[in-house]
Image (cartoon, rainbow over all chains, first blue to last red; front, top):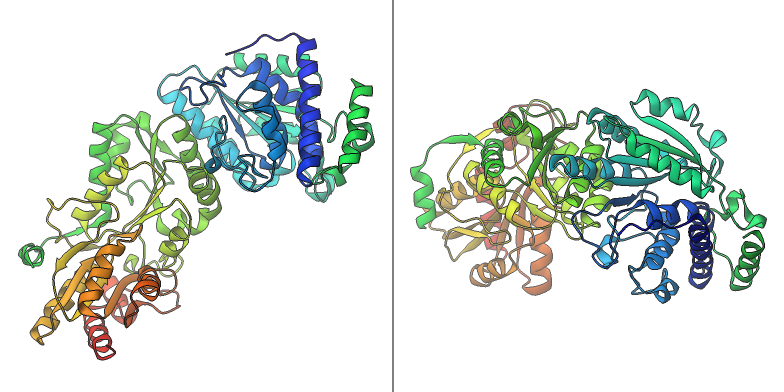
Length: 277
Length: 321
């Protein structure tokens, strides 16, 4: 299933996904709002325009695989999966509750359809994406692998082990996206542990590097379409994003990395979303 | 008794890692979904023949074990059955978090195959002689832990784990040891093998210590003591039925392993007995120490993992009945 949604349809969906994220986090009373909102446009593009998948057959062998490496943005993954039809939208309100399939960080052994991997401990998803891409290459499959990473996550050494191996094995069926919001728990990435020159790092590891505005739906689509044309090497998209995007009062404020809104705040945030929309 | 008699008729010395290598090669021929990964130790792990025959299904990971384990997890997402190979130290402690999250918690069908485990690695010393790996792996939910005793059993175990769906830790070693398990004994994950029946004491051994336990059983027989010797090749899931039946009959137990006393076979069996059938237990294991350089035989003597230690432990536990 691949839908060619219009930009307006995608805009409506990303608005919906953001609302779902805010509501489910308010209901949960804890969780990571900032990054989840910051990735809403990218997830919307992936699930409603880029990925070749079938929510009715989550284990379909020829599906594109999405590997989420940063488990803490689970709310945006769950909202996208629900909106795509993997499970009922009402289930989003069970986030982080006892017995829920929607664990605080995605857990593969809780039976959630559409989830490929448990995540939460950082720096592992790129390696998993590499392995998945290799398995596709072994069988000459045309399905592709998409992985999502945080910028702070790139401080984990295992990311660079994985980056080295992806280039070594010429994995042109792998596209990784870095959520470049310049913020991590303890502050700005440049102060906590500087990542620059980031594009040069990836280039020197043998990757094709693309940049995009992670909130411009057309630009995100364009980046993924360009990545498809790159042969013999993996592609990384450095997506410039804003933590908390859509809710002006919290945008780029790193204190909203790991916080959930109260129900009252959620109402206010959704109003802000509507005004911005 | 029959198994022991058969065992004594075989006087062949082979390394367990070669049992793994032979089986892996055959698996490669039988099942195109079997893939192998190695972190720059292809010869040591005996994966070289697989790598030569199936270059398209062998992935050199370089000296990057964390990446190797998670790559293996990814390979399962495309339907492959990955076997990873490196030393036991780098297969467990170094990559614990990758195994925990990307393999065990993600329920991925990864086979973590680890050589050079324990003191019998010898001269390289403590940095490489991991004695905590069984503990690290057995505490992980969803994980199966297997420690075969010789070449034939390692080969049989390698075939068995390919058939089983789920994460497995398979531990084996470097030195040439007696290859005594008949090659027609079926390997069933979680099913212990009674090598000698007896009524006075149960000796539960795993890995390289199984042979020592067989020898101890014979020595005890010379003293008129009828020991039951059981090969616990699967530490998790533990064959509770066979263990409880045996201790119900004998009333006491000895455990023997090339591992720390904390976290190994001994404490799995002690935990079982405390819960279901309290009985005296003596444990042959490394007593909360790191290893050191030396030849394997000398080390097993120095660290108290030799046949006479098992005999003494049996006498001691019998007295405590």
